[in-house]
Image (cartoon, rainbow, N blue to C red):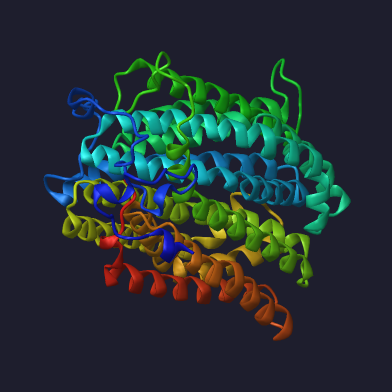
Length: 502
């Protein structure tokens, strides 16, 4: 399918006679079709805010560092909030920890549908910005926000609210976990629109090269989130003691404020991209088609990846230590989130860096930017993995005093540290391919390795061969290494230089 859609750009006259399809216009995603509005030269060359990092010129290392450090910092802030959540909830016992861990997996499984919008927005904004077409970059932002709103209100929130308890039961949650996890999920899904819109706002700004503004927004939101966690989980002062649901209320309140601030940033007109409220709100179907053409593979990838993680939780329930394994997985995952967030940060940076240079037709610089992101991500993740592997027991003890949970968590951290550079390097390569316009190849590789190989290897090693939880962690390592090798092979081939999306 993707091979048919991702064709080299034809001459402009090739699409002059045929209409642009509302979903995949002429399969080439060009702007030469007759129904694309004329863009004045002044609009196209309008200079973005100074906060924008232009990846098409200057020292590639310096620009990559400027672009990526705020994303890394913002990602670490997210880790800090997650750690605070688990630390505070951990005081309540293993079941609340398991409830939060399982609930988050469910949330991000459904929210993965919005990756179709945020990924498409980031790729298009990056390429339009690299080409100097500010008007279309702004149009992408408006259409992305509208699409995300519809998907959330029509699909994600209703599905999450209705099926929260059923999904947790399907994953193997016992009654004590359900008591904590079900209200947590229902509250999160009630306020999901603000979480989703914040994703799109951040993706748009990052695509344009402004990674500092999202960092500031997240800094304020996360400080507020942690403070509200403490007040609402434990009932400090006049605040009610809500326990686990208090963490959900805190997260939603913080996201509401972040989203409102982000919309104000876009509407101000002083940043790298803008939300022009007075311009037409009529849908341009060819632009919606571009967003979903680029983003649907990322949504499928995120959805199937989280389904695989849900299967891992199910496998962990089948091990000898059951709920303790799930609790250890949740805590270890929060500690490992440092390296995962580094990978996500460089994936976003690579998407922007490669996308801007492809938009500027500078393919050699685009390829160099991709490999540089891989090296930086792998280097940082090695340092982080060594740290948490050596301090595994100390770190686990920060979250819980349960000896079984600590033992399983230490095992997970030590074994999975070996694959962290392959994980973050692979994420950077996925971002590079997305920036180049191919969101299908990362999907294919993820389906093979994450969705199929990971749960199969984990089940075979843990259950069939009797390695128990150790087999689950080894299964992860094997799948991640294979995934990195496949992505590196495809990116190095350079096939993506012949693709066109704008």
